[in-house]
Amino acid sequence: MASKRALITGITGQDGSYMAEFLLEKGYQVIGMIRRSSTINFERIHHIQERLTLVQGDLLDQASLIDILSVHRPHEVYNLAAQSFVQTSWNQPVFTGEVTGLGVTRLLDAIRLIDSDIRFYQASSSEMFGKVREVPQTEVTSFYPRSPYGVAKVYGHWITVNYRESYGLFAVSGICFNHESPRRGQEFVTRKIARAAAMIKLGKEKELRLGNLESQRDWGFAPDYVRGMWLMLQQDKPDDFVMATGRTHSVGRFVELAFEMVGLDYRPYVVQDPQFMRPADVDLLDDHVNQRLVVLALLLTILSAVTLVMWRYHRRDYASPRRTGRRI
Image: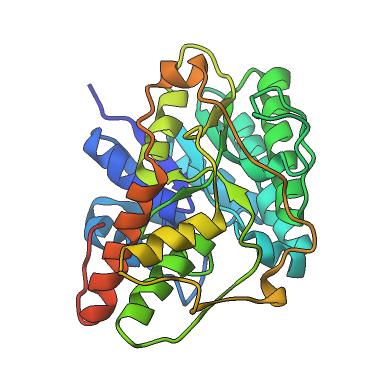
């Protein structure tokens, strides 16, 4: 039997790289879409790059999406590409809407035109809940986004539902709470904290500047979540799922754990800086792990383990800067 083919948008990102590894281990042929750019960073997929088929395309260009689907005929599409940094969405709201919102429509419509049997996964976000209407949040909780990023994700989520119900596509959304790893971009708070703890311990930096330390988040481990994404496309019927650990912690608690692991008290080193405060922050994001998640058999990781993995990466990385080709 011929192996399945999967297309991953955003393959050079955190989730895309872990998804590529996961699908290769499952025996898939993996096609990765990369944007036309002279500055593409292949660090996260360097160790598997020869096993991938990389193609140029852009969520802003529907013709490129149609071409990719026509040539490579994937059985599954994982849309993991987006302008995904919440803070940046305030500075680039139109671009965020074009990519993170309308880009989903372009990809869904390309699937409708080329092969309506393709199974489609849309990466939705807990940021859609924003000013939460209930605690904990579930698949039926109303959305009240508090950033241009969250608004764009709500559009991407509902257009996925709309194409599923209007055209009969197997299209699902995974409403993912925060999931972290050493492959997280350095602009994200967990990576920023883990890196700073290592650098301060090594004497290479003196302080860590952060925004709201009281913000509450549910943090899990990214490799667990990509397995959940895959499982959603293996169900008999398409549906939307929340993915979370069911445990909520503050940014301050993450800082405390990271500095504890290097034997430091964080308080002399952490400075709250107004420039990192969001114009409108989300409320308490807290999901309960319900029966739907048990069905998906997710293996979700507690905060301390996530922090430990990230800190160990940074301790090794910055103590030995010549180390390359890492698989983490």
